[in-house]
Length: 314
Image (cartoon, rainbow, N blue to C red; front, side):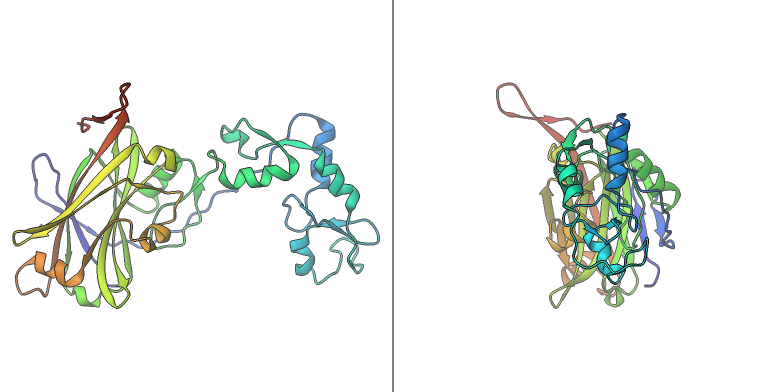
């Protein structure tokens, strides 16, 4: 992919635009959260018995054992080619029903308790909760690379700034111009433009080019750095135009719990076909000069049941 340029125009005074050039992707890893248990030594030791010796994850039925009583989870049973990883004996199809029964009596805290989750669950309900726990770490929202970083929002904001070199801006309005000298060579390219901080929250603005069926298109959309329930409190609009025409998009930002690909494939954002984008660019239509403006605002329900629009942040 050849280098692209992005210009960000401060909305207050329309200063000279600064070009943002493409930067190499970076990978960064952080440790996975550890399982937590309560302070009862008996529960701790039983929980250790329920830890698979191969993958170290908690075991769920069917729990398998060899003739010598060594256990492992059903997923790892196929990985070790039906050989016990401890004594190398053939595993066969022996279930450890006693350990499965013991697990039914356990109640354990969510593994994200260190991140603030106060819930305690029966052993077999714990895994289902943890998959949707509001306190679980977020994946890095950076698009265009397989970044494996997870963490809370403050950590990810610093990661985006320091490791991905994403530009950070304060304010709830924006005015961007995307410039491409040969737009017909851009296929399935992804860019994250910037992160905005307003109303005490962070938002990721994405812009990219891809094939929608047989038609090349450009798409811009906003993601909220938080959960879906919070994202619904905000609305954003995007506007693109030129030559006396314009297209306006308005909607709620999607949470970064939804992957970048999921949002893009659902077409939940401002989509401009390439021919229309080149028409907006003017000139001989051989160079893309697409200006995208937008704003973010917050809506709250007032006591009378109506909608109250919170003024734009300064």
